[in-house]
Image 1 (tube, rainbow, N blue to C red):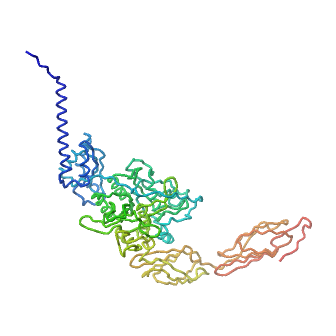
Image 2 (image 1 turned 90 degrees about the vertical axis):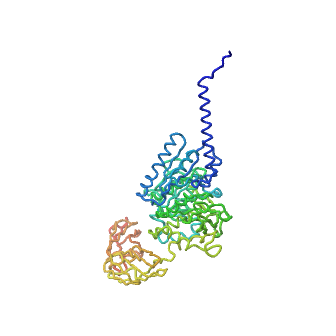
Image 3 (image 1 turned 45 degrees about the horizontal axis):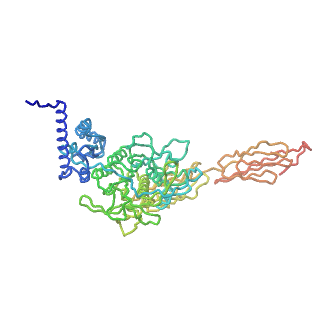
Length: 634
């Protein structure tokens, strides 16, 4: 009888495990293929396409939307969202411990959770009642057609004011706004981008004064590398920041709103790419940190419902999202997401001749069975000079360069109108733009190229006044004349001594001597504007002349320092030194080269009158040859 050989037990167990693993992979692959091929209404089209080319063990980045999307983004709302997400995050954490999930991120601006999950976990997610939809956590970019073309030399003189304005700043009329005292002071703009070089002379502080501590960049978060200090390993975010807020410290004025503060969220890496979830978290962080405007110059050709919901919630929170249209022109229907969202303030690019750039993405946009015109406005975006890391400047092109012109202009509007809502700011930008292309709003230029001055002051009055006289003796009656433009209907004067008037052209009597600062606020139905003239009215009494000198005697040649001691605030002086010479300085120095006794006369004047004092034989000059003998001079 032949004896049969028996396999070792350990070989049998190994074979059994291989069979089980194979069956598991087949089941997973079947479920995975079913997700990719079946019409699962919880899976977005972009995610379904991604699944079709993904292995069963690969982790796919997704954004998981929960059903409750009506929770407002407030402190109480955030607590409610965290409570809603608790069970889902617990499930994901459990799967993470099995190496099926990584990179879990809670998102509160929308009720969502981002994570990278295996297809098997994704299949489980679609079965959960606390999951509404799942979309691909897509890669967003800053626009690859943008180029750095020309490096621009900074002024060698580190001046407190710029010697040259970037052409876009001049084109939109920003300097005329600054002349009215509006520079974006008190407004915080969030730059969600590649980071920022916060040591650039144009971006390091607000007043370019090394003796003060007033940083321009007051907030920073890094969703790419988790660095605690600002940096920019690409350059795009620094270029954008300079167009919004550059101070011109290095000799080139790049910033539309140089008085603004910046907070910066790094969501794009050194190649200019980043996850959708990080972009959304950047928007969330901006709202949490009191930004009034978000400047975002990135996008994707694929629409994201999650980003659309983010835009709407940001606007509801009182923050204006200013978004680049994209660089996929001149073809129509090429607006990038989130610029395709109706509530975004979407920006196209123009050149120095007000011609739409060939690369600027065009509308229309069709979403949710609705078709509308995009972009909303246009701005300078071709060969725009702005800041780059290392304290330098370069000329770049792209709708990314146009977008910060609009963000800066929005900041100017908000300084003048601090309570204005995002929709009203967007409307103001559109209503005051220079209409280009087809008449009215079109899919190339939007409503036209922005005009900063009209956006800030258009429709509102611009306060202005004169007065006569502006100086004189007490009591002084001054006639004030309103010269405001823009048809104001109400006026408020403050005369600098606590008294006010609501007349258009008041007369006012000053009864005490002093220098008075006058302010006029002019108002109409569109808003108010204020102008202040410091120490504008000077009220004086007649002066009384008096003086001293040192020395009053000595040998020729004798240099004498004369000091005015007059009372009554004189504004002009006339000295006679007794030797035919005169001076109109307040405290002159005079040299006597001849021996003699000299009579000194001082006449002082102001708006109230004049006073004269003479001192005979006041200065005595001797010689070495004939001491004690003087020739009197008159």
